[in-house]
Each structure stands twice: as C-alpha cells, then as structure tokens.
Amino acid sequence: MKQQHYFRKLTVILTVVSLMLSLFDISALAAATDTKKQSPIESFVIRGLDDNEQAVPNAKINLKSENGKYDYTLSSDNRGFFKTVVETLTGHTVRGIMPGKYHVSSIAAPTGYQLEKSNELIEIAADQANFYHLYESRRLSC
Image (cartoon, rainbow, N blue to C red):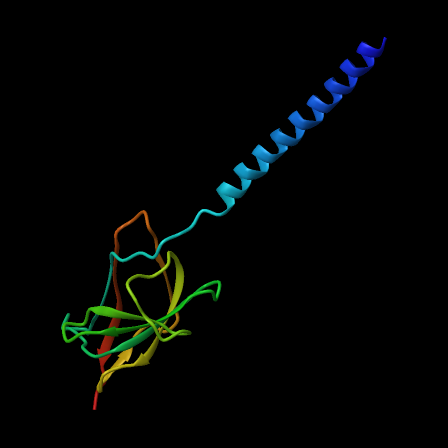
C-alpha cells in the first residue's frame, strides 16, 4: 500500500514535470518565431531624373516608414543616385534601409527642380529587386 502511494506521487510529479517541459518548449518555439530579426536591405537603387531623363544631382529626400519607426535622409550623387543614407534620428550614416513601406518627401532639391510626387508611398522589400525610379523632378519654367 505504501509502495502504491509513492508510485502515485511519482506518477503525478513526472506528469507535472512533463507538462512543464512541454509548455516551456512551446513558449520557446513561440519566442523564436516572434523575434525574427530583419536586416537592413543594401541592394536598392533610387535615382532622381528630370522630364528629359537627365540626372538630378545633389538632391536630398526623406524616407519615413509608414509605422514611424524608421526615418532616413538620402543624398544623391552627381549622377542622381541616392547612395548616402543617414539615419535621421541618430545622424549616423548607414549601409542599408530596413524593409517596409516608406513615405518619400523632398528635403532639398537642386535649383530649378521640384519633387513631382510628394509623400509618395514606396515599399522596400527583402524578397524583390529594389529599383526605384521615383524621384522624377521637373525643370521649373522661369
């Protein structure tokens, strides 16, 4: 009778331990899937062109994520390619942009040009070619 009592206690303890371990495994699995870390995307091209397909050099645009989490300032080179990316909040130059949807706005346009579509929404995604021909500018008539 005493052996049966110990056997029942042992069975209950093993059952409780087994349940706790299975719950731990489930919560660990859930935590592993919830904390999927995204990396910045370095392979994107944004180029500023005017109506005649000529490069718009030395322009600055702002990319602000739709959720407000990321904010970047991009500067174009003399060929109109936006290669310099600065994280606006920290002022640090970064190598890539986090995936997501971004609103595009103009910070500084070269003399004689204006941003055609202000606050345009674009998406930078890890699983697609990120080539954007979005900063089309127009030569202002004098």
